[in-house]
Amino acid sequence: MIVILWETWLNGSLPKARDRVGAKGYCVTSLGEGKRAVEHSKVCIFGGTGFVGHFLARRLARAGIRTLVPSRHPQRHADLSLIPNLELARVDIFDSKQIESACRDCDAVVNLIGILNERGSTENFERLHIEVVEKILETCQALGIERYLHMSALQADTTQGASAYLRTKGAGEERALGAERIGIRVTSFRPSVIFGEGDSFFNRFAGLLALAPGGLFPLACPEARFAPVYAGDVAEAMVRSLDNPETFGRVYELCGPRVFSLRELVAYTAQQSGKKVRLIGLGDSLSRLQARILGLLPGKPFSMDNYLSLQTPSLCHENGLVQLGVQPTDVEIVVPIYLGRQTERQRYTSLRKAA
Ligand SMILES: NC(=O)c1ccc[n+]([C@@H]2O[C@H](COP(=O)([O-])OP(=O)(O)OC[C@H]3O[C@@H](n4cnc5c(N)ncnc54)[C@H](OP(=O)(O)O)[C@@H]3O)[C@@H](O)[C@H]2O)c1
Image (cartoon, rainbow, N blue to C red):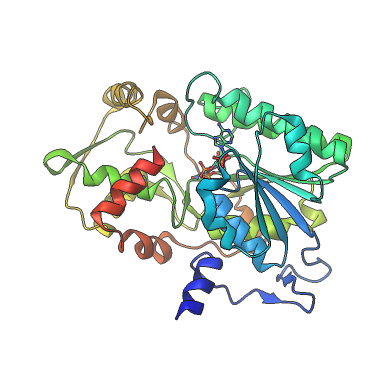
């Protein structure tokens, strides 16, 4: 029983039959004729302590690859130490020397660092989405690390992005792709909203719904559209691209198999978490007002910048998962597993964490 639970956790909830372990312990994926299995031996995952990072670290461990996860607070992520061949290190990501010593014996770097809302003057979009990318790439250049995977977002665009989040994500991605000129092989990923155990989308809404006064839930931007993508599939896409030359210099949009409105996703969350609420879809001016008010609360459950991001559909032109041979997982296969088993208390804890 313990072995099954352990394997389920390590596999990111869904063990996939398409992977098998090769003679060297590396994971041989079904990339097709002529495309090689992963060969990198140690990967540094910046932002690896986060939600997506957990999935990626487990997936890399399954592929027999050692990982280094730098963090501001390694002591808060002791659970990661259970992953085989994973090392946690305390690193200030604004200190080039510390980044360099963290990456010293890595041969590839993944950057998952990102924030949805700014906090104070130091935790801002410019620093975390652009400056950090530049610092990591400088380190890659200095240490001769030639492979870099970058996490962007759908609709990220330096000039046309609808929000500061999307504009800075676009600028960071631009910097990353520009590193091809200095010999770093870059692949960037642009996911829609990502779901899976520990996500901050379904879990956050489940927490907020649990607090709905009188069973009424006012929902801003109810018609915003998403194609939620499973974190296990995002990690799979990243691992498949790691040593695949066809992915060098390319950007992959990552989407799940179905498109939903925000209203549909929140109604689904209520149903799965057993909460009877009436959703009140807010029009544009009330959505803006809600963003202004909630943006003043600690943890910013919703902000004006989030409102602006929701003005462009988070949908793929072409699904990179399919291009990389990954079959997109549907929300209904995974979400009931973790939302359905949460107690009220756990929902509050998820909400506190997401804040
Ligand atoms: N989740 C989604 O639905 C979604 C959708 C599209 C794109 N993305 C992008 O995917 C990436 C990963 O998302 P996620 O949901 O896994 O994020 P997450 O759980 O919030 O993790 C982000 C990581 O960034 C690091 N970080 C955050 N603020 C920092 C700061 N001020 N200084 C240093 N490090 C900081 C944290 O590391 P430490 O606290 O350990 O230092 C954390 O591990 C992000 O770039 C995000 O923009 C996510």
